[in-house]
Length: 327
Image (cartoon, rainbow, N blue to C red; front, side):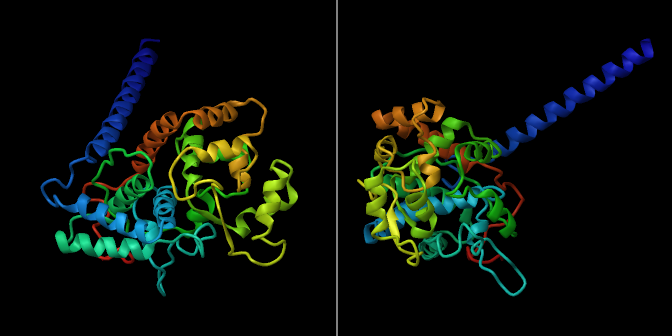
């Protein structure tokens, strides 16, 4: 009996030690990201990125949404590691041609320009993954949205996964339970799901992403559906686009949620957040619709959390000199 007891205590202490080590390692990874990571090694990095983003958004306001989306599609595939930026080669398959990205994700040339400008300021110091994280924040700010502190120190991956991109990035056809599960699998709460979905207050969607919603579904305002059909025929026009927010698609605000209350969500997945059944997401949509400050605060916090997903730090990964290929 004593032997059994000592054995149990030994196992318990071993378990506690493993748990402590786990949390220590998590703390070490988090500690390696900091808001002032480049303050000495590249003090002009953030201002260089900000100026480039402002210029790109001024040139094309839609670009702000595209750059924000790049960061999201990067982070949801094996973490925020810049893998989405890698080009396919004869012996390497990246993520750009995965279903959710092909002929859809854009802004790569802007990232190229920013990377080149940052390299001119301090070569081999700032990662492409960090550039994506900062660009996402600066794009939102450029369109009138909130700012947040971006923790820095990510390194770039040397690999990518087209299969993970196909399976991990939420599709516009998902229903509410599928959305909750998909985001939960990445560590996000239902509240964070709704807050992050508010990114659709800017940008556009291709006809192929919402055709079924506007022709075959009832959870949409019929007049609104008809207006979308004018630019999205039942057959053809797959790449025609419509604004995700009918009222202010180039301004980061809370109008997206007001649209959902009126059953004017462009994507099936958008309108799933408000079904009129007084559920959790319904109440969150109503709250964000009535308070832009609440939405901005929750969105900012969710973006910080997303930006820290499975990052490479320390000696892991590399600092690419060209975001499109490994060194």
